[in-house]
Length: 325
Image 1 (cartoon, one colour):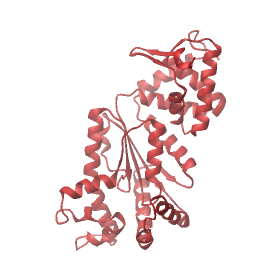
Image 2 (cartoon, helix red, strand yellow; image 1 turned 90 degrees about the vertical axis):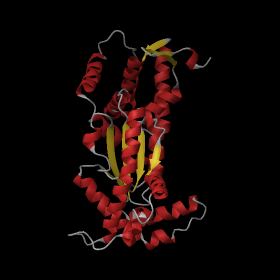
Image 3 (spheres, rainbow, N blue to C red; image 1 turned 45 degrees about the horizontal axis):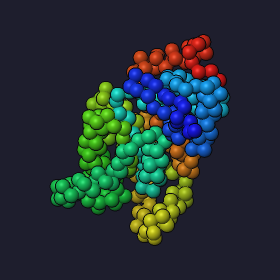
């Protein structure tokens, strides 16, 4: 008979059948690739079967998963898993701002990250801008009616004092306008207690006021870059192939602009202490982003949550009620 008919996870809210698939999904939040996560989930299932366990609490299952991860993947991965478990128990939503210049792979990363963290809401800033365009004419907010990499064409003259690059002036105006939509989405996520990923070139580290959301959400900004120019160019070719022959000429025409915006985003990230992830391969970058999101979010968990998990770790070896190997 299926394992789900024999082992039940129980807590105050009720009971659920144990699932290797769900277990593997929670393990992937640590940055483990799917195959490794499923392997560890199978080991956890095996240990439960060996002990003849028919019912286990969520706390005991977390302890067992942490021990199994420590054995198979090392203490760092095990600690990352515990941090993510603490985050999922918060009543505040997690809001991830995944920024980066055009063509660095943000959309793919956001989709994969959402799958690993069990997040169902992923919003691109291009979609926010498109909605705002329909409500605000080019006469009212000209910056909204251009691409990020040619925003210099809609900059109103004269340029601000001490600013000589119209591209960055236009991009900043555009990002400030889109930030209105990002804030609205974050407030909605707080009301609904729903995790959210906002991805796009306009998802700047300072798009959300940390003070406003300090007690209502866990805000984690990240900036993704592609340092190698040839690799960056190749992303546009891949994008065209995946989109059925999408014309990449415009991206190549404005490639120098795109690189300037990347330099600007890197500077903004450094100014705000935001992690910068240099992207080389999807698997490696996804693992790094997953780990950083969990690590950065854990830093915002209230002290009492950390203390609760620390006490659980200290007691796990001596508890007679915990599930043994």
